[in-house]
Image (cartoon, rainbow, N blue to C red; front, side, top):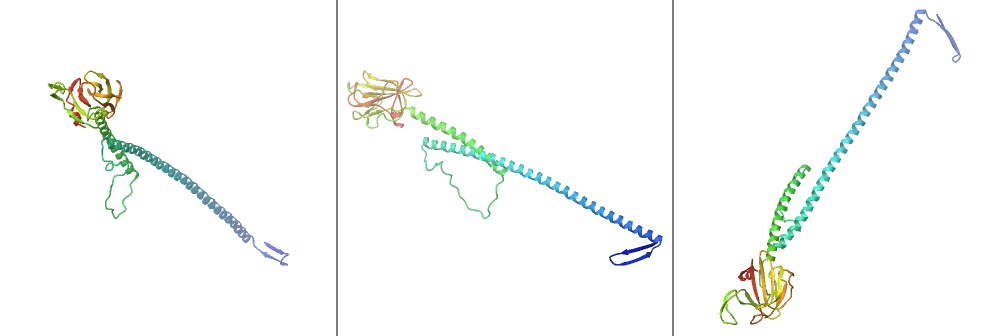
Length: 308
């Protein structure tokens, strides 16, 4: 076989004699090279596509993982916020209860006549101690919740006990208000006691049903306990008389008044002025005759006078 080369560029012509076997080998090599190039290109192209697919898959997995992690973080934040809101609500409840306890404590100080400087509910209790070298450990939310539950239980206990104490003190205060005690005059002196005495008009031994307090005419006569006025009128022997009904079967009587200042049915408070001291009725001079009755029976007023 003769292959002829013609080149207008190089201005050169020539020919090569190639035998048929040699030409076949050359053609085979050419085809093999072409196939190899095609196969190699396809391989590298397929490998590139495979790598890109793997990269895209991994990227998708990472994106999904990020979304999941963000959701977990958001849920954790929401849960933490819920815990904080719950703790804040508990703190608000505890603060409200402490305010009520402070108010109750102030009332008890007043009712019990305690030292307000010693029992100052508006100020925190004094505390102290030596500071440690280490800063200490931070408290965990779970521990804080347990402590708040314990404080709540303590507040429940204290509220119950203070309520009982308040009831006792108020009852004592009310009983002191409605039970006769003290003198029926702010100024004056005791001129005659309860019991047997010499009658100032007859000179004979008679029974005196009350105690007498002498003083200047017009001196204020005061109620020794709160109650309701049963009588306010002029009677034989007693002159101008005021009788007051109290609790627990007690009643008190104030006689020989210059003038009565209350009417039947009036409600009076302990210490109110109910009359002016005088000498009406069977009286030898200006004074108030004071009697105490319990369930309809006369009792010696002296122990009530001295129990003030």
